[in-house]
Every structure is written in structure tokens, then in C-alpha cells.
Length: 329
Image 1 (cartoon, rainbow, N blue to C red):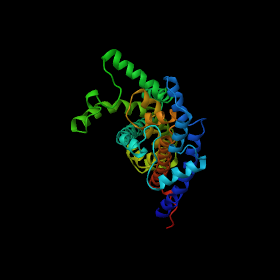
Image 2: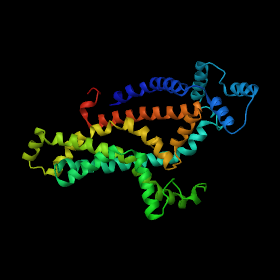
Image 3: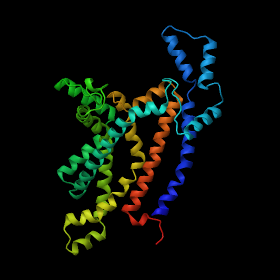
Image 4: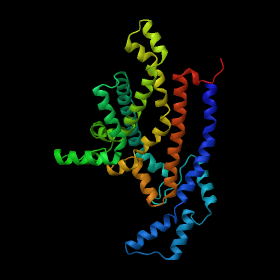
């Protein structure tokens, strides 16, 4: 088991370097740069900037350097534990991301717990009560949850809450707590608001995992070892939980690799629609304004989360299923 984990840990630095090259190429791909967008914004507002000012800003931001030099400077800052400087905010990216990191983690953990706590029991019930009325109802809800876009669900719920209950459910805090320092009252206010974004972000993943759990468990329930377990006198519930569930849950553990960064982004469009103070809207703004170092830093964090999520999935699979372990006895 230790060797199995070490082999995957040694791959992380190599993957991070490869992902950093891909991320920097992506943020550099659109035509123009931050200054191009900034000058266009000034022109739209009736202002202008002479060429000398443009040249000075290019030199200040390092945009006059070749792409490989800009990438190397960014990697040097990453090696020092820094994420570079935001071109738009003129502040360290670590500060900008750190301001939203706490709420991002809280929302991601809430959605993750909601997804697993709801998906696994419903998947087990649906598989063990196959073709029942409730199973058909769960199947319809699952298809609806997968099909409906998260941002559309958010808009529908926001409209219903405002139209019928005269309640605004955007954001993670009430207006009086948005700029207030942390306190017990602010924490309670967060709990009052976080449940809806948690459901909106987690509903699609819950529907997918429920379907996967149901399909895998149905397949396991037809295996010969189930007949053998019943012959030994084990109760149906004890038999299902002891063997088939442990095997059916394996594919769910493998989804952490792609699900973790998706949760941390807060489903970018949903976060923007619901005015959530997490990293998602910050990424959208940085991409729109071509703030390449901020956008690249956030995307690289998502890549790192995908790597960490995949590592967690590998460890969980090796722990749950001994057949996957590669350690020699």
C-alpha cells in the first residue's frame, strides 16, 4: 500500500509542470492581452491612452517579453510559493484567492457531503427495490437532475422564492453581514444561506452518482456469492451491506478526481448567477479581462485539485478493494 501511494506521489510534480504549460498556453491563446482589454474599456468610456503610457505599462507588467519568458517568470514566482501579481487588481494573486478560499471550501464540502449522503442511500434503496413505484420515481428525478442545467435550476428557485415568498436567496450572507467581521451570528447567517447553493451545485452530481450506485449494485446482487450468503442464513440487509455495497461503491470513489475541482469552482455560472463569494466569479472576471496570471493561478489550482482528487480516489479504491492493491505480501 505504501509503495502504491509513493508511485503516485512521484507523478505529482511532473503532472503539475505539464498542467502549468497547458494552462499558460490556454490563457495566452485569446488574441491580445490585458492591456488590449483595458484600452478598449477606456475607449468605450471616452478616455484614451497614448503610446508612451502603453509601452510603460507593457514593461511594468512584463507583457513586452516573449511568451516563454513570461512563463518562466511565472514559474519562478510559483517556485517561491507565490502565485504572481494580478494585472487588474495590482495585488498578489494569493491574497485575492485567499479572501475567497474559506467560503469556497465551505461550499465545496457542503455540496460534497450532500451528494454522497443522499446518493448512496437512495442508490441502495433503488437497487434493492427494483421496478417498484418509488424506484421509477427516483429514476425520473435522476434523469431530470442530470438533464437540467444547474444555472437554470438556480434561476427557477430564485424566481420561486422571490415571487411566492418575497425572499431574495442570492449570495451566502444577508446584506448586513456581507462586510461584517466573522462572528457567531455571521456563521449562523452563512448556514441559513448555504443550503440552497449546496443543493443547486450538488444536484447533478447526486443524480449521476445515484444512477451509478443503482446500476452497479443491481449487477452485484445477481452474483453467485449472494446466493451462497443467503444459504448461510445471513439476513438480506446484512448481506447487501457487507459485500455488494462495498464493491458497487468503487466507481463512486473514482469520480472524486473530476468532481473535486468542479465543486471548488462552485459551478462557475451558478456562482455568478447566485452572486456567490467564491472563486468561480473571480475566475470568470480574470478570463474576461485577460488577467492571465490570476486566471492561470486559479486554473492551476483546479488542476492540482484534480490530481489530489485522483490520488484520493486511488487510495480509497485500494483501501476498499484489496484486488487493486499493488503492495507485495
